[in-house]
Image (cartoon, rainbow, N blue to C red; front, top):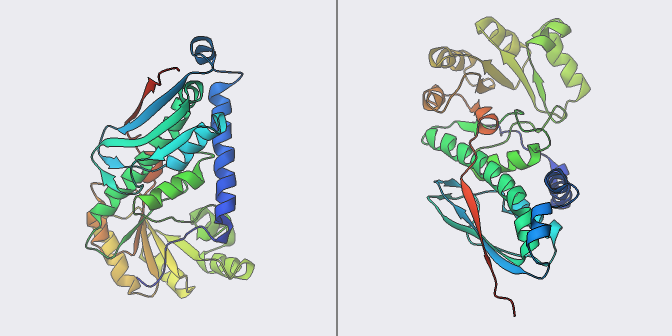
Length: 294
């Protein structure tokens, strides 16, 4: 495999990423808290302090501690967030984080923090399971744009934490010429030529569905071909037909159960929308203990 998966470029500098995280978390808090957490404000003394422990209750990969920590920080900068595990490693269960500070902030932030942590850990876990399925092959697992609106940056980071890789971030950073683009452009050759003329610096990929379209894409010197909705037998034949003249990506109707058979056909990449659109939330809980008041 000579090429590389599509990754987000220099625009994902750490400062910008932090700004994005802050804005995403702020929106989630505003959605949940609204004008105020009426239950906590009414029942918990303003000076009460507590210690909360987040615990992982099922096997998987933990990811999203930055988002969880940011949720508590925005509610009260005095909150102390202690990480008890590294992110990106498979674990069976156990404590994940310990949070100390004003009890009101811990209770108000609980659901937002757990929503982020559970969702992102679920995506990382799905990526880890998929990556395990292709071990021993030269195939790399990629995500897709089938992400939760507004959470793409976080979910794609979770995919990488689980050991898979990112496809294009959005419509702006790579070409993926599909059947409707081809029809509008008048064929694969004209579509590839127009894309190259517009942005020669961007990676270019063409969707193909049969041997004739493969030949057209190769004649246009497309560097990567997306082999659409092909079964393992068809994929193996397509890889042989391409013969290393372009990178290959299998996409469509691939599941965790069929992933290894797809990888064994020799494709360079397999893209799985299920890493994000069907990932189950990792089961986590938060238990709080009030500190003794002095």
